[in-house]
Image 1 (cartoon, each protein chain N blue to C red):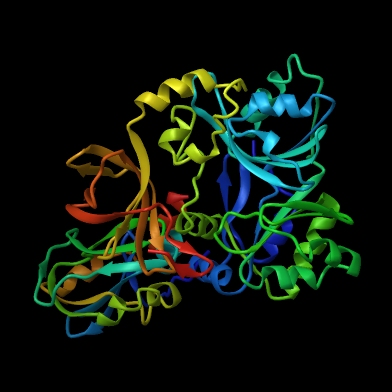
Image 2: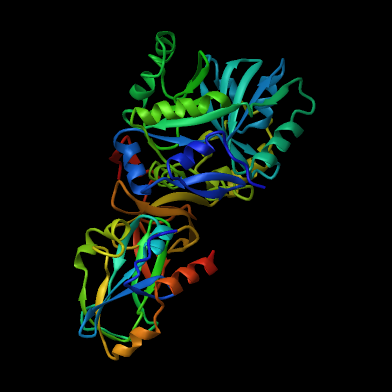
Length: 130
Length: 359
């Protein structure tokens, strides 16, 4: 079983969301997701200023094995992207919940966080997949 | 049904991620597939290939049997230990499998056949013995470890006694010698120097551990695929199969047309195909972001084609592929990617050799 930090929120499509305060969240893909994909070789991130709605295609992560869409876990505006991933997509493999973050969103509605899965709920959704 | 090789426990000890590979539970990777790939290009890596099928063919008509069975001609083999790569065709001229045959004497050969199609291959090999005085023995008592990379031979050398070292000292590429309890072949599937070693099942785990202790990196099927694709080597079931002529799979060089009186299975169909075949395998290179994948459609002025194998090349840092396209294809083709159409370069299907780009 891979690591699922209790302080984060999750989606059933393997994104994680960390509330940094003031309605700003950091988004990435989970350790479980990077393990399924294997070594990442390209990341396509959204542009700063993009308005995303929950469920939109926000990014693409591509590994040696497969390309996978990353969906916006919440609705809001992209205010920062992790530019280091351009040259070092492997950060997602080595530190999915830290240096491998993808982008930050300023939430339109902070209460949307409550609709996301908690660690236990996400662990349960992985079990259902398997 | 899931088969395990004798090294299964060793893979789990090294935290391998195991997958089903044609009925065999095999390591896809241990940690990072790309690091495993680099280990082979830069130093030494090893693969458990014990799932491949080893068959000894012995008897007064072993040579005649193989001359009928294979599109390449074992008559070319006259030096003890010399190996030959060949396709094994069906009557329709499609590829049942590719294999390596080692020559020891005109009544004594060894075949190393693919793993994906073991049962089918064995059935075919046995059926073709009809009318020949030859005996086939499947060597499932043997495991097989491929040690590949610039440091592979020197590292294996540390595990050999002086007698074995003498035997392998001046080995040329594509030979296989029995050296004590090891059958050591200068063959591989990576585009690097190295050995493929056959040894008794019960010895294999200790030998694997000795290689690990010497710093040889265990590599999974993932790295094996990126390495063979960079080297431009075909994978059965992807780049060719029973419905594909060897002529359309860059295996034309493995067909021995002469002597013309030699009949082999598939020859008649192949002679027709020689006149009509209008496709070939080329290499594709895409330096921009994205990864070419098997199955993607290729569009060119000469007509459509398909990517048969595609991946990200860890050595080159961009995507490469093999594609079956019309013979008269130009210098570029378009590929239908996810959400876009991309123009990519057409090259010879060989990308990396001995650690270096050959583009």
